[in-house]
Length: 99
Image 1 (cartoon, one colour):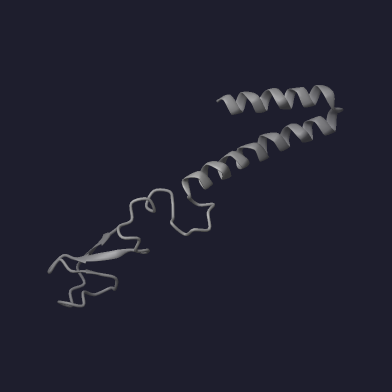
Image 2 (spheres, one colour):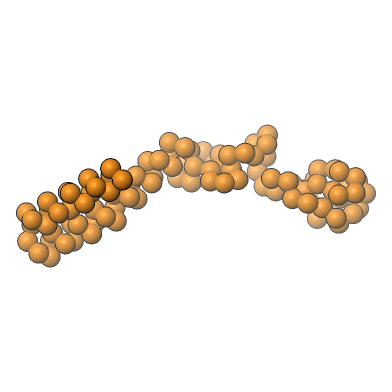
């Protein structure tokens, strides 16, 4: 809320100083660019979507086990963990996703 109030005050100040079309353009630019800048800064702090490290972020990327990317499956018959469509141990197609 502090950043929203600060950007509002800056945009009103720019509208009073600059003539009509330029002040309006500057105010719109502040309301569009400033939140994008803040989001990029916060995501880079969390090493989320904006980073190049590939560690992931968001909902499922933080809790991945062992750094293994992708979805692993657990067979419901023999409880074997695998990556494919059928279980390599028993051949069953009954499985659940394990994130």
